Image (cartoon, rainbow, N blue to C red):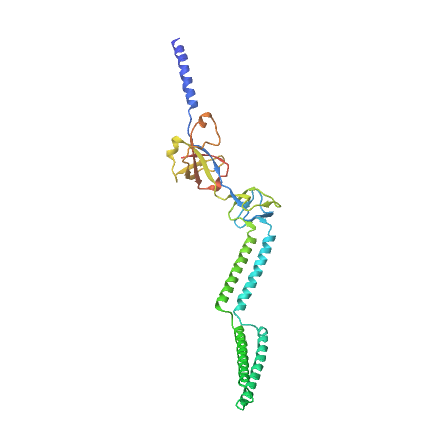
Length: 317
């Protein structure tokens, strides 16, 4: 009888111990997930979207075509810039040369006529000069003849100077200005060519297309995203640490990562620890968990190819 009584009295105590054992939490790690920051590939210029070469889920490599904008207007601008560059270059080269014979020919004819007038003026002056001492020619007439001769000489000298100037190249300052204009025109043409080429957008990273946001036929404003790409090997782990355990973590600290179906031995290095206790786990399991203040921690995995964005993980020290 006493043995039975003792056993009945011990049952509540044993039940309490069992219940306490069931409700006690065993800390096996910290909950988190894999994240990958998507890169938005936007239109560098405004225009009509003529083609999208990739779709959601496609793998992309550096230099691969992604999408194209209509280049009709930009092509016309390029053609005009190239023609202006050709004209400016030709003008610069022309100023370094003398005038063509066809340009000088009218001046040569004018010189022939001026020379004939000078010869006539000199002949008249010499003939009447012999009559002046005999009184057959007045002094006023001789002055007129001498003035006519000087005028003819000046006219001939002026034509000779014009011919000489045309045979020479342009002045140094004019040549420099023309060369600078030619360089500026070539730069404008290069800029227009770059604008045309920039309407065919190519990938500058490797990764996988996450979203295809626009379709051909849409007008795309400058800076509007057309596709988003998840860069290759840029995955990182986000997990949440209670305030009481925050002192266990520091930048550069190595942590262990476990996930369903993942290979054993995955590690990551802490790269960021939040300074504000405003983060809570994305998946809340109980009221007790919701009441905890949590700090976000990010870690870069040693093998990013072994995990996938969106995958739940457990992190431990």
